Length: 518
Image 1 (cartoon, rainbow, N blue to C red):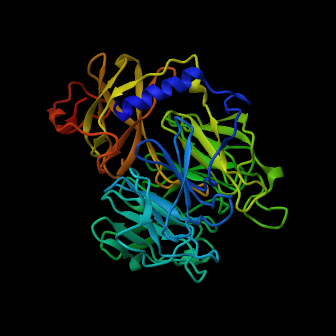
Image 2: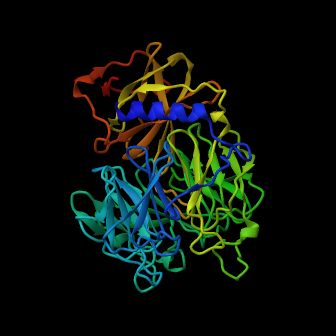
């Protein structure tokens, strides 16, 4: 049985049995993990790679990491032999292999290291990367995929406790090179902590600092890099404030007063709009992109000052346990049910391929040692709702391709969406993004879909969904975009053909494209 077929059968059994609910929408049982999932990412194959503490939930990623299977619920605690402390690193998928780059780490004194590890998505081995280490030590840096398959990294703290002010770019062909022309001295003003960093539709890298209001654009086309200030953020935001790209060039950021802001980073000067209020400050929150384009907000705390005078959000009494869901189409914020445990500093949130929301971790330090997770079922997973199905789809495409998917009922499909898998940590997920794709119904079972251009549909692992008129999504089909062939699947080259579009989509392709016809 192919992996995609196994995934659908396994999920149908899981949902037929049904979860045991506590507060409606959350599973009653808190499930055990081997570590606190400070860092988490859905990887090829559909499992979740996570790490951050030792096997006792203590600070210091040490030699431990965990692989969790969302379908079976089983997890596998593993050890690596690299001697790198992977506490508070950054992680991004390498499109050339489908593996995950784990960059930086802790030298034992809460300062950075230059180490780069590689997590093998197929064998689950975590090893030193063969292309070597970075030029600069980093702890709490931010990394993102670039359109050409490279990986960009910025910020973090070096081995001396100073800001790493010169960004770098990693290439699968040559390893690391620094961008001295893009030196960002503003990072020295305690802005080195996971800078909000995104790639816009023009291929520019946008950096939004939390401690001051400056917004920068980084261009790397000349080899040395260039940086310029392009605007200012009109509000204050805690270093632990959450952000995520929820649509093309649209980023949502939470402020220090419960405000929900949207910034358009696609123009020469970013424009800001305070679109909603979520009632209270919510630092350390996890943001998860639902298949329909809404954003689920889980975990966090309403206090930026801890009882011990600290400022990392570990006051359990101020924990925000209810989920909130923001709809960008209306800017309504829906208050949902409460989860059982406080998810404070070092917690994480992820959308899973089946549409559930993972909320886990918290601790190291903290009043709780949350080597565990909870699962939230949005309302579209009501057991009475019949979900649309993607029966077959390409395992890999290139950005800009037109491709065919087979579904159970093409006439019932109202949307085709794609969500990029990114690495979640410290309320950031710089690689995650959501897209609404153009499509044409060809027959009762076949749909023609147009992928977006490379600066929008960046290389990496994507979750493809169909959505019906009741806003119920299918289980996601995992699809590689402009990346190495996914494991557990193969692409039959005999099914590649040239297709002339048979109807006009909302944004019709301008030329005939290569299509994988499934």
